[in-house]
Length: 198
Ligand SMILES: [Zn+2]
Image (spheres, helix red, strand yellow):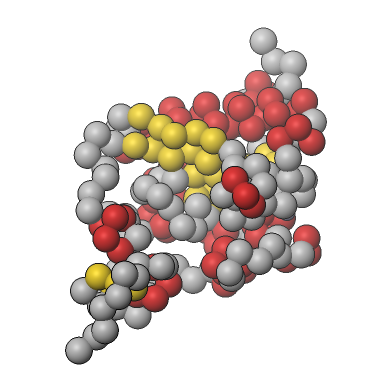
């Protein structure tokens, strides 16, 4: 018998999905070891190992990047809340939104707008959660490198899995999601990269 405590339900520990990582299923795995820092007990990586600094030096496929701008870029969250959960990051290793330059702020904004349009087109989402967690106390996983979350929402996207086992049912593997969003991303125009556009 598996002992049952307040931290367990049907033998599944509730204090972290890490503990159920060994359950086999039919999904392929996309291993990106450079981003394992996400799950290392909340430790912040040193700047030379920062996943958001390293990602632009890799291929789009390996880094799950869907679009690259002049001052910022867009990649899939390796641990998505929902299918198509994107992050918009400045290339510079800065932690706080008020450290971003006007050019970075403008491009983070324009990339966020484009991402919303692309996700609506690709996956017909009903809504979005947009936001930045500033500091570890506010929930930032990689607190030292600014990143804006774009989480698509559907009317019926919440179910009992996150509640009982901190597990989300994600219908598409990350590589397929990245490809569909990257394919739908419009070619960059000067307006995308110019803070003073319009
Ligand atoms: Zn960084």
